[in-house]
Length: 274
Ligand SMILES: C[S@@+](CC[C@H](N)C(=O)[O-])C[C@H]1O[C@@H](n2cnc3c(N)ncnc32)[C@H](O)[C@@H]1O
Image 1 (tube, rainbow, N blue to C red):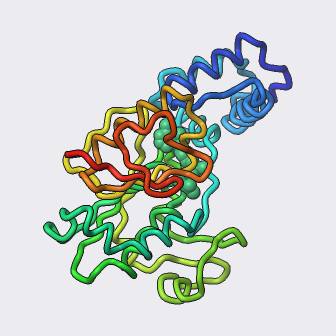
Image 2 (cartoon, helix red, strand yellow):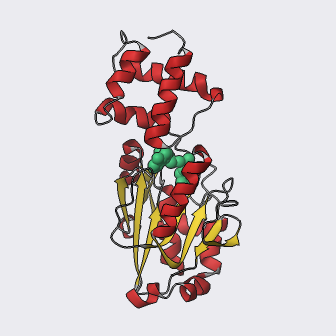
Image 3 (tube, rainbow, N blue to C red):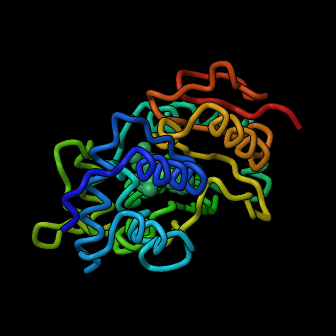
């Protein structure tokens, strides 16, 4: 185990790497956390004799399993079913307006949604259940769910959950869309099949052929600095259809950087221009 403290220079090196690769800004307040996470990774990967600098050089190429486990460890994955349920209530209550503002959905008989920092998939499966309930019949639901951490993506693909008190699942949804298996709840295939999971770094150029009707980007922009958020919002704007919606987390805001989004409600925005 590496019991040494990270020097200022070492801490700066890790912070810079995290900022450049993941967009995540780490302040001085997180120094001990970074140090304990890095020490843990060095221990777990049997790199007990490596120094922080050696470990840094090992993850630097960015294309090996040490880098992958570093990303899994350094990112925060807190999520729940029906988290910030005002978004799901908005979809339920405003479905007619959503369809009126975005005629593409009825024209193509499909809705394309992106859960862009999906963690273990709770958000994407919640979206799937709510759309299944409230979209008019006959409209195909296509949900892309992405996250930078491959660990959470493989958990999401399992679609099996131990629920806790922060999962606000109404018994109606629980009975209809989950199957209880001992202490776990499994998402039924009709819902699971609506979602495709991939690893994807939001700092990369967006490679999509078709634009989205709805994008969820919740509780990840808080980790980015202002210019990074601004850049990301522009990229979201460019991959939304006119009339498409952007949902962001409750402690995030597009104030000062609304780009050309129309504010609908706190944390809910619409792309208006062609
Ligand atoms: C706190 S979780 C939020 C999950 C979900 N959106 C919600 O609100 O419940 C933040 C997620 O963002 C992911 N993340 C962090 N940086 C990212 C990046 N640069 N690209 C893609 N995902 C990222 C993390 O791995 C983590 O799973």
